[in-house]
Structure formats: C-alpha cells, structure tokens
Image (cartoon, rainbow, N blue to C red; front, side, top):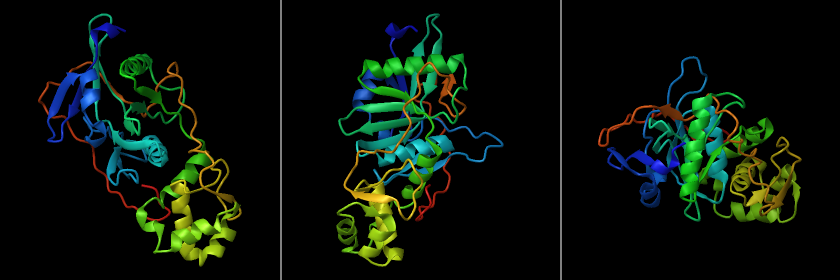
Length: 292
C-alpha cells in the first residue's frame, strides 16, 4: 500500500455538492456526522431488508442505513453514551496502490465520540466472506484513520440474544416513553435496589404505564440489567450503570474478509463538484417495542 502518497476524501457538503480534499484536512474540519451519504446504498434484489432510516436517540435525527447488519450496529452506537453523532456512508476515501492505481472505499458508518475523535466502520452480516480487494481496502482505511488518531473497525455481528434485547429496548428509546411528570422518579426509586423487573414496575404503579418508562431507562443506562440472557419479567434490574455496555462482540480482525454488507470499492475517482447519488430514503415508524 503506497501510504506515503496520502489519502483524499470525497463528501457532499451541506448544499449537496461533492467536495474533494486532503483527508487529514477534511477529518479536522468536516462534521461528517451531519452529512448525507456520499453515494447511495446498493439495493440487492432478493434481500429481505433494504436501505432505510434509523432514528437516533442521540441526535434526534435520522441516519441512513443500508442493511440489517448496519442497522444493528447503529443501534449499538446510539446506545453508547460516548457517541455524540453518527452517519451512514458520509465519506469516500481515495488512495493509490503501489502500482499507482487509484482505489477508493466508502465505509458504511461514521461515529463521533465525546472526545472529538471519530470512527469509520463496516458492518459485515456474516463472518468469513469477502475478497482480496475488500481486505486491502480495509487495511488502507485503517491506515488512514491511524494517521489522524481515529479508528477503523469491522464490527462483528452481535450475539442473537443481545441483538434481540437491544432491539426490544430500542423500541422505547424515544423521549415520549419517559412518561408523565413524576413517573420516572418513581421508577428510579422503585429500582433503588436491585429487584426483578415486574416486581419493581408494580411497586412504581400500573405496569401498563410503568414498563415503557423502565425500558426507556434501560436504554439510556439510567437503569441497567444484563443483556446476555433474554429479557423476562424476573430479570434483575439494577440502579445506575453496571458497565455492561451493549454486550457487542469485539471487532473482527482486519485479516478476516469483509462480508457482503460492506463498503463500496471502486477504481474510479468522482470528479470534484459533481454531486453523487443520495441514499435511498425508506420510511421509518418509531413505535414502542419496535426498533426502526
């Protein structure tokens, strides 16, 4: 990899115009978390899940998602208290390989952290799939991020139980599930000591009214419980944070192949000033008990 030749970044500015500039300069000055996708997510015939939107409780805005695997990782990031912003495919990285050929890659996710640093990531739907070009692109993007003090990760799929629990809690992430005035203090008081979920909900009032507030508090870490076993009425809920995080699996090694749900690798360079296609916009309904 001819890292010495440097990296370029291509992105859409807030006016929708394509901009190309030195990667190090763009990383310092551009708020990627506020940008639209630099290119559309591919629509693959036959897949059960296509491009859509994720409503972020962190930012109060929608984030474009191109696959179910990507939506799951957005869910994890949205619950991470250290994440302050996120975006889908906001930047294309360009570089030259050792033979002088231009290469490019569009990572699926960008996340901004509270310390100002950033992360680019891809979200494989399965382990052990992909090809040599995807591997080389992952190595290049990792090098580009390391150069500026950021990180690049290939986020491994979540354990099925953890993913199901997070999906359930995500359905209650919207502020409306905080409940009426006085309800959340009653919920927190009911769980001032660890106790079973339903027992604490009944202590705070009518479970039909209380449970959405409990799940809202669990999403925001105001209350906490293990996510490694299925949620049920007897699961023990604790006050505050246990530091259990999302239960996400660690990032894959860059020596593994990128899966089908991956960034976009291309040999061509989009001309500066030429707008790229925007991401597909699917409908999104934010309802209790339903993650979107």
